[in-house]
Image: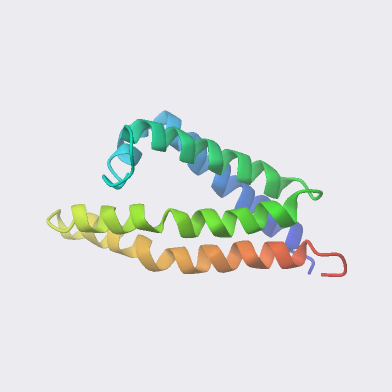
Length: 126
């Protein structure tokens, strides 16, 4: 697949960029942390930001790309409850904000599929 390296770089950039955002504008991520998780939301914001940066770095390097892409699929799945919480919390906001929060929910599916495609493309002969 000729575009597989480009696709991997784009996925890596998305993950690293999102991870950095957890440290640059942490309050918006703190608000998404489900209350059922133990400890302060900021701890989860930092941990998830570090995870996104680490996974993005793994996807960027061909030697770790397959494992990194699988981890990305898992990460996109793991953050789904935070997106559900955001959609619920934003249900009374103005229509554009509410629509953006709701749009995040089905967006997780193509992100997971993208990560799995990058993993398959990283296989020998893939």
